[in-house]
Length: 132
Image (cartoon, rainbow, N blue to C red; front, side, top):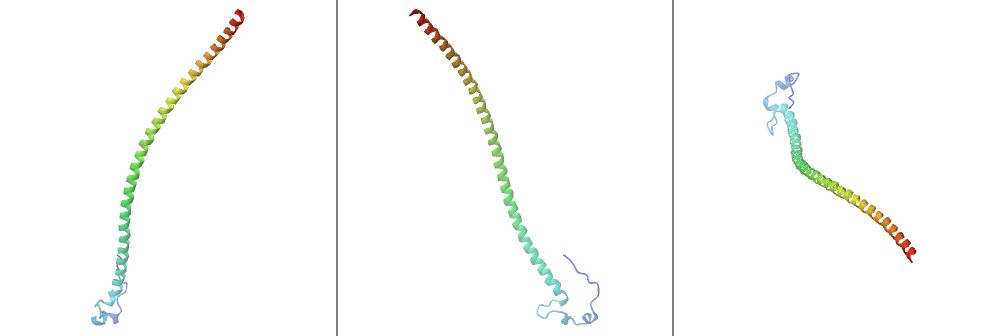
């Protein structure tokens, strides 16, 4: 707290005043320190208000830390889920590729068998023409 040190001494007329003349008859506080006392009261009120604000800040900070912790846990779970799903997609992709390769082999066999069937059909047709 700031403490005011006077640069000049009190005027002589104030120094010569009787003590009863320098104090408040209601509260007994010296007029010379009453102003400082009132200023200190205002500072205390301001500091109390500031303390309430900071108390609220502590509570908010605690809630935010809890929320951050919760979100971090969720993020970790999502990462694990994502990795699992990525692996599953890779496996399904490999199965699909294998099925496509198998399908292409069957298509080639079918095409080959159709060609053989055409050849056999022609041979049969020619054979019937020749022996009929």
